[in-house]
Image (cartoon, rainbow, N blue to C red; front, top):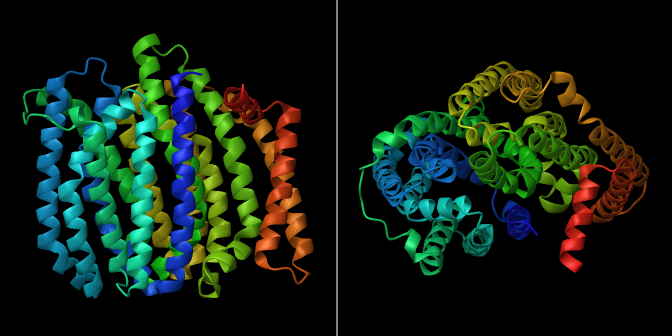
Length: 480
């Protein structure tokens, strides 16, 4: 079994446990905290997104993709990240009161003070994780990720039950960070004992500047919904919109976030060893594999959104269901080019990645600005329209950089469209029939979900889709 395939298996195992714990955590927290309390933490985290993007200054990506990495370069990256993170930690402490006053909520101030401590600590783990990614040691990354998820989930639930309100979320995150640093120090001490130096700063600044800018824009885009809705509407609306999108983020966490670092590390290594010869075919194959998973998931979620919301979160969150359904379409569109950014980074096109991320951010700002006057659902429709424009921009870049014609990009996804259609027909028909019965939500979810998975697999097998091929390969490697 190749090291890349092993990395994928370990990462999926880690993410699977992490998502299971997150689902449990969200289900429990949704009943222990009110939407307003959840909204306080969401806004505070969103306010730190810019600092998170600037904190690593693109240096962790540099460690992963650089062809001639040396100890001096790694030590320089470590020193710079420490200086930036510690400065931002002080900045958060100084600006927490102003942020709370801006939103008219002292809770935001209190959460930011705890997040400031996180900023002080995270450099101790950043470089270690980057080195593990470069070497494709994702089994160690998986171990630390599982430990982090367990600590974060258990501590957050306990503190929320004990009456710590939104602060339970902040304290849980801080405790998990501390434990992760300790675990990494025990497992990989050689990746933490770096001597402070800035000797190689000139060699990394050209790469890191545009990577940092791209990451900054990307992080801002992720949290833009919370930031703008919290300011333009109210805190409760932030929680409602976030819950609608949060259901779909399960797939983001399970698949996209798992594959993103592996794709970047894998393609960077392939580029170092073989140039760009195989990048085009690898990208197309990855797109077919990913849409074969993403499109059916979002399609089934469209029909099961209400049942899942009632089962896991309760009736107080039903306002998020229409948002979830509309955003299913937006995220399905985004999935067609989900791995363009890590591919651009691995090829050294960080400037192009920055321009693309900036274009996406501008589209989202325009969409939210137009939609907020008409309600949260209108914002979701606006973001779906902007996703279409973003997709066309991505297709154009794929043609220019990887020489993949627009028609080839679309035709390569034809099989994914067929297996998605089969899953949607089954899910939609099943939910429609069961909605007239007295069955509970969980039974509807199990029946519709199971039938959709069966039809999805049979259709993928009949079409010899990459998804089916990968499942068979995984089975052979596991049980041979």
